[in-house]
Image 1 (cartoon, rainbow, N blue to C red):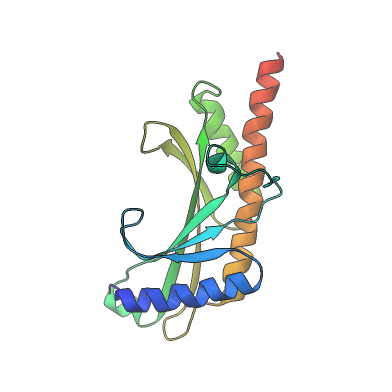
Image 2 (tube, one colour):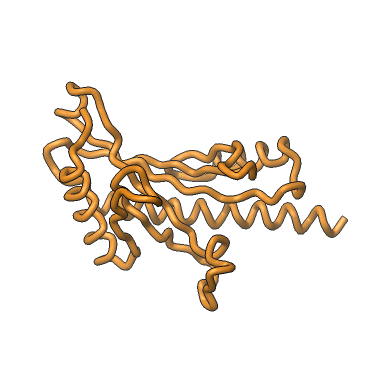
Length: 176
């Protein structure tokens, strides 16, 4: 069952309001040039210094995730709903071999408590590490904001750890 745009908007506005109330920046992104679907744009909590944010460094300093309600088969949709959360990390070209990146992804998948990391090509031919997590709830109720917030906090930790692993690995290779 596909959710109507109004149902998506209501659910995502509810979550954005809750997340903002617990100091996790979130905004509903309407359909348009940046999104084919009504989405939830979330700023993942990070340990990284976010001062001196500019248009040039925003892609590296802002840790953003996107949330979408998944369409379900009619029978499933009467029981449960899913919010898919997604973020990605660019991998610098030439810094690491594909095997080294896959080993780091595997290491992180053993560390994180929610979600999974994947490695593959990005839109512009760059290599990307994707991080995905899922929040589910009862179909007739709003998704639990606390569960969504906890999942997002865990994603922020996982994102930071993966970036540190990538940066640390690149630094240790440069030093040799």
